[in-house]
Length: 256
Image 1 (cartoon, rainbow, N blue to C red):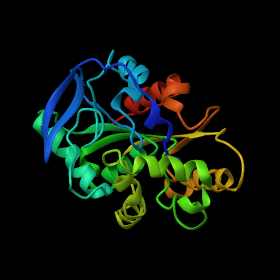
Image 2: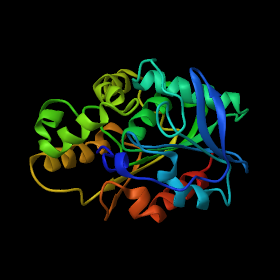
Image 3: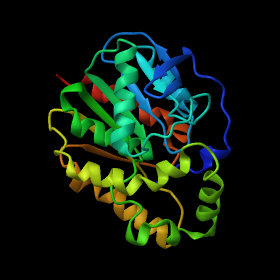
């Protein structure tokens, strides 16, 4: 569950784009003001904020929306800071505070972005009113049988290419550490309305079977979450944006 195709993709700029000051340089963000709670989007590994285009535009009809490019992606300044989830969560919180966007938020994360949003919601439950995980990375996704060495020549080749592109390889290498941070954090609060969208169709072979088992394990990790299986490949935001919008709308409609 890792967005490798994003390394090769280009997208039009999201509305509300501007440059903000982050912890360690400039960060490209897109923000459209609207009613609270603000919906905050976290893209997959190496993906631009534009991967949320269809979802972002639709949700902006009813709520404030915020998306950004992590350091080294797009026009966001590269950084030498650690690239584990704890560092990324604090960078995001700094951006939100710098914009004056007050919690609580609805957090929406795809792929590795879903792993970061799991950590955010566990560490700072008082700042989160809803959580939508879109085919998220499991905390132990790339351990054991799921390691990069067992994922075939194509995956290894793409990640070797990614080694020279900004933070992509450091982020990937830190995913096991991020997963450990998630599992060491307090359990997700049952107060946080949560929907997890999982892809039914994402390849074949041993690695795909391993990933499918990890997807199924989210029901154990988050017993109060609503699990929805989507007839899509891994890129649910691009292939089935309506399913993501519906999940966000459901979360927003829950009593708080």
